[in-house]
Image 1 (spheres, rainbow, N blue to C red):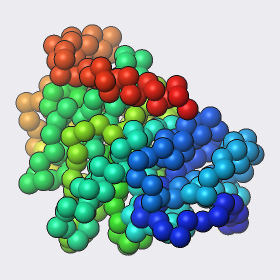
Image 2: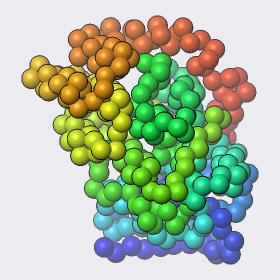
Image 3: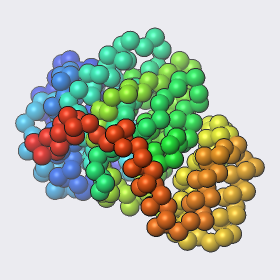
Image 4: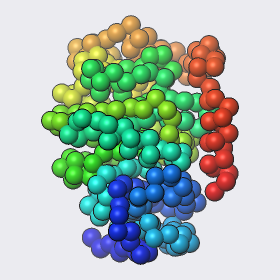
Amino acid sequence: MRARETAKEKSADVSVSVVIPTRQRPDLVQNAVLSALRQDFESIEIVVVVDGEDRRTSEALETFRDARLRVIELAAGVGGAEARNIGIRAAQGEWVAFLDDDDEWLPRKLSRQMVAARQSTALWPVVSSRLIARGPEGKLIRPLRSFDSARPVSEFLFCRKPLHDGPYAMQTSTLMMRREMMLAVPFRSGLKRHQDWDWLLRAERVPGVAFTVLSEPLVVYSIGDGRETVGRAQDWDFSMRWGAEMRGFFSAKAYSWFLATECASRAAKSRAGWKVYAEIASRFVTDGRPSVGSAVMLAGVLVLPQAWRVGALRIAKGRRGRQTALPAAQRHGAMTLRTGL
């Protein structure tokens, strides 16, 4: 595989390397890069990996005149996971943070996370945060559930309380860790989905790893864009196979939640049929440990029409009221981040 790297004059002092994989989304990646350049933590470099021949994206990145930006152009696409791995290997910082090309960071993201990382006594701290989910229904802080370091990370990822919380825990653009750890435990190449979950579940097994999730939302995560066609494709079979392969990394409770929220929902959207629904329900009981919440979720997904489910979730969200809506100051800040670029 041939790769070409372009760079301005490289910084001699890099603490954090920001790795951004991208492909054929020049306008979005420009916004992502700008949000990284506008961090109030200045000891950074930004490594953008263009995943395959993409002239428009390369030209868009050439408009930047900042020594902290490096661009690696791959001759052929390798997928998001391996593109991140290539960026990690090329990085110069002690720490690595990831940013998807359709997401953005608030200006204090890295400074807040570096404080948490330096305060950690763990050998391999992994620092995440809440995020601002921006979509058709507005901007909401997610996840609503709180992180408990005493519980398996799989339960934070998949066990939803309340039910409408969504799959926003420890999303890739929130993650920061030591580069040395990422070299030892890279992303698994070839996965078309669940790349961040796959890495987090494997990383939990590494001796000396400790997770921290900051309660402050530090990332703007876009919902309802091109990523949805990949990240939320109705490929229930892939999710089932991945979940079965990774079963030993889940708690029993989390595995039932995964089947209910990921596999059952995809199967229902693709109208896979009752034979598939029965298989999911069987694994839900025999391979997991159902709770009241996961059982309600599974039944609702497989039995209720989608329009009813959407209506029920909207009612539940409305009851949360002020607890789910983005505070005015942060709402303004997120808007400024996008429109001020």
